Length: 265
Image (cartoon, rainbow, N blue to C red; front, side, top):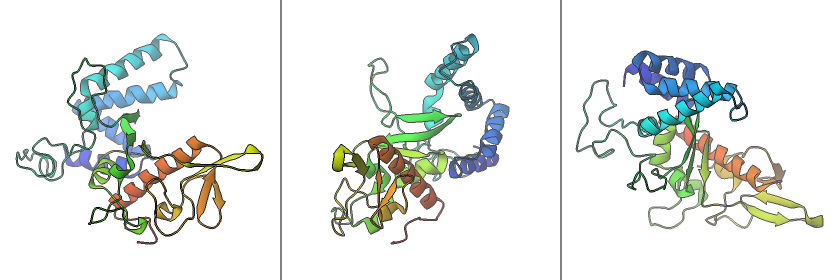
């Protein structure tokens, strides 16, 4: 990895909404003959054409090319480069005894599973969403994103929750906008006249149950309505999920940049 590519990849990951560094990185990949450049261009054109709606020959051609590039190079596209050995400096060689990546050059953040290629099962532990050539969403469990346990192995108070090294590494190299946690559901409350509202916690004391996420942990979730002075509720389950998933990614991304958005730490 060259210095230019490294700088652009870090810029893209740190600013997921900015298009300029993406364009520069895509052009650099093209100059280097890296298939990620073509993959990014195919996805950008498909997005501009409103895929999958237009059922024309060009859209079909792009969709097939996108699928073929991903099938051939997905493992490389998912790579979370190891800063300890191979990618610390341009031209550095892999260290077989590297404690971070075991000599693979990838810290294993979005690793491949050992299942037969023709088994019909997903060969990756973490399903991801691709956009413009980059990973923008990762499906995982909450405990993979934030460290929930304290040094004694018990559930820690929310003030001590920190991003995991895995989450920090993923956000350092990929412009992740959402960690889609699969093992937590928002709480559902039925109000008068059958109206429903959804939220991530209830004001029931200083400790946090496993499935509860008090708003101060992540400062302010997106959207919703303020309930009391610190809790937020949503009209639908998916709205509540999306708010948490976006906020988790913003929390980890800010932490990886050295700015932890938690007032109570």
